[in-house]
Image (cartoon, rainbow, N blue to C red; front, side, top):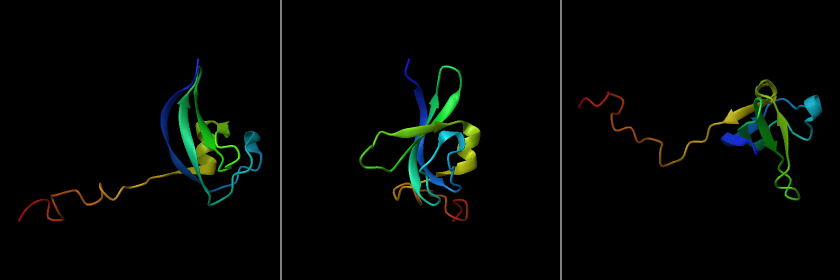
Length: 93
């Protein structure tokens, strides 16, 4: 049974794994695509390499390792920024 993808996004490597848990090839400061998956027993992360020759290649790690080596990048879209009509005064005019 394939794993269920619960969330996906972009993360930034803030500490290089250097083969910890078998993870290698991730560079500090670089961004990578990730997926949080629900497996048959537990949740885990897939972290995809930025290698154009192998676009679907990823390595896996648990939630603790992911948080130790990577930070999730929150991306704001221009259309959602500044859409709060209440203004700084809480909507009072």
